[in-house]
Structures are given as C-alpha cells and as structure tokens.
Image (cartoon, rainbow, N blue to C red; front, side, top):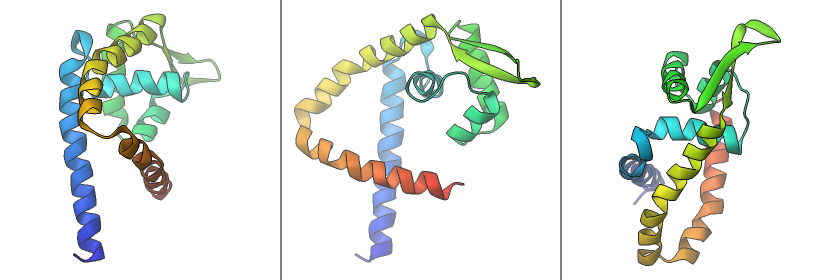
Length: 146
C-alpha cells in the first residue's frame, strides 16, 4: 500500500464512521433533534455562546443560509434566542437558552446506552490512545481551511 493509498483509506474510514455515527446519533436524539441542531447547542456550551449566525456558519463550514435554517428551527423549539447585536444593528447574536442546555444534556444522556454498547465491544485504552492523534489531525485540517 502506498502512502497516498493509506491516506485515502484512512479518510474513507473516517467518512464511513461519520456517516454511520451521525445516523445512529440522530436515531437516539430526543424530540426530533438533528446532528446539526445538537452540534450548534454543543458549540454554544463548549466553545462560545453569543456568536453571530455568520460566525457559526464559518465555524461549521456551512453556508449562512444553512446555518440560518438550523438556527430558526432551534429558535422555534425555544432552544436558542436570536437578537440584534447591540454593537452592530445589522448583525444578530445567538444565545442558548436554559431549555437548549437541557436539550443538550438530554441528547447526551440519550446516547449513553449506545456508547456503553460500544465500550463493551472496543478496548477503551485503544480508543483513548486515538484521541490525541485525531485531535492533531483536526488541528491540521482546521488550520488548512483558513
């Protein structure tokens, strides 16, 4: 296997893993949550709340229209609020609500049985060893997108 074959196979596996895990994740989500909606809520809790839709769109590498659609669905569910930016009246600010934080926690809780199933089938130390390598790859890919 050549180096380019190994890289192609590596990213093929990542793509398949992403598709399979996202499909399973959405099956487990409460109240019709999608992966896109969950990732926005998770971003607001983990990374930063109070961002503009345009900033969120760049962070997730989706169009502003796609992000606007996701945010409108979250707002309709009462999981985020969208208000004018006091510093720039042309822009909006997105904030997660307490209901949004609760939905994030409920979504995480809904996945626990699936993660426990995986934990019983995979060696946890091997999975843990992959995390720093995957984080390095994510950092490289993140830097390359700019």
